[in-house]
Length: 379
Image (tube, rainbow, N blue to C red; front, side, top):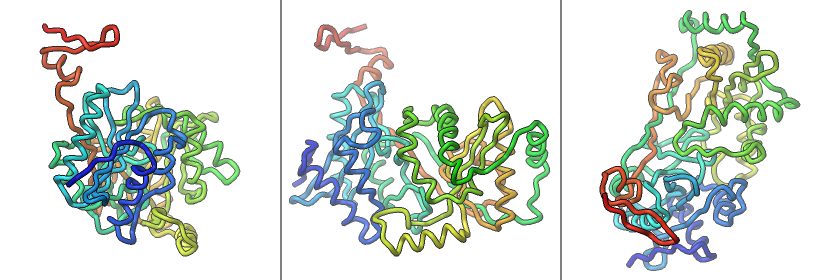
């Protein structure tokens, strides 16, 4: 017999938090601190949304869980922090309860996985479950099947491209010409130092919030919250691999790469992990291209920035992963001659039938609110 807990109280939170540890058996990717802050409403972003935890148990033991995030001004409800045993019936029961709540909230669809914000974590991994790179979504191999079995369909596809080392024969005259053109125009390609990193991140924030505004699930966050969430980057990056493009003291493009620490950055931090992290940081064999952006006012600057990065990768003789690129984006098509492998991810959606939006769309009966009550209007 299944039972669904939906009240955000101590018992539900305890059930919610204990499930991942049992599922992953020693390689638990759970960010326990973030989950506790989200559930208690104490996360830096908590004032921006409301959350509703859902936990399905069987004979008192948690079987699956998820969190519904509601933004007042958004017509979509976001489903995240999903974890589950391989139990389709339980998951459909879970999503049915979430569906009913989202419908009650007058949302037009459910979208996920999205852990409250794209600045925390989103997307479902579809392949390459045997290993994980730093910053990659982690989930069990049967999760996509569970979501699709409950009526969710792929809304967006993302890819991560594995690139081999750059060699002498990989010189591309087209991109080099673009790079040299921007240098001649007075653009400076530089890296921050330990003293300037914090200032650089503030400038990155100003550019990033404009460039990422079109991303599915994007919600603007203020600078203080952004810096609170991404301040950790200073501890794990090598400054050489953070590239910034300026002209007349204005930032026009950025690229943030981090060493591939594998799974060392997930789960509970230990002394052993810290030692391994320091070793990887000092002598990385692979970098993850995590965040890239270029002002729309400078066509081609993104290509120039990637070419600049390519020079550094050639000098250091490291392999690279271009991480989590939305399908169809230009950055996902560059330097295909270097590709050796590709990983895929998906963002899913399930329409909510008979929502206000759906009824208007079909030209049928519409529901509106008037004087605190629902009124049916027929066309």
